Image (cartoon, rainbow, N blue to C red; front, side, top):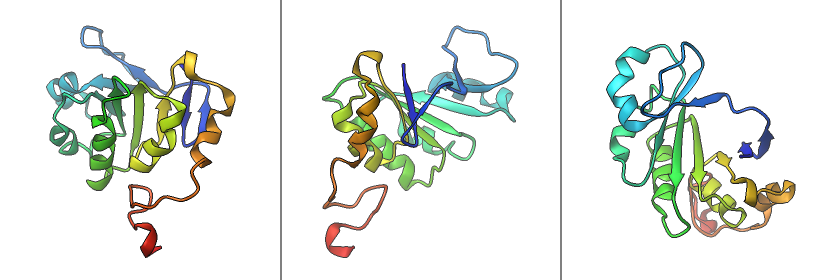
Length: 157
């Protein structure tokens, strides 16, 4: 799947996604399911760590760990599920400065909204990717409400 980070197409993903049953590699940046991270976090001290969460996970347990994480990947299961947008916003409000990545149902028509909520990386399905997808970030020129990218509403700018 093509990966956009900070509006740039990236050739190699530096993060190794490790599922629950897989053995941990000796080195490299690890992306772990939240439950596995919480179970093994003491054994992983000193490593670059990221967690994979979905709308069913407790965002407060992630926020409690933001000083130890460099990546939070949020799974967006369907167009109708907006919990990932809320999670990204809550992470940014809590002071998380690492990468917030959208995984799953990521499409062009929501990229700008995702960025405003706090996402800065997007794992785009192959069937939805076209090189001109990067133009989606600048298609809306005026935002009325405040968001993670600028908390001031339009009338305060």
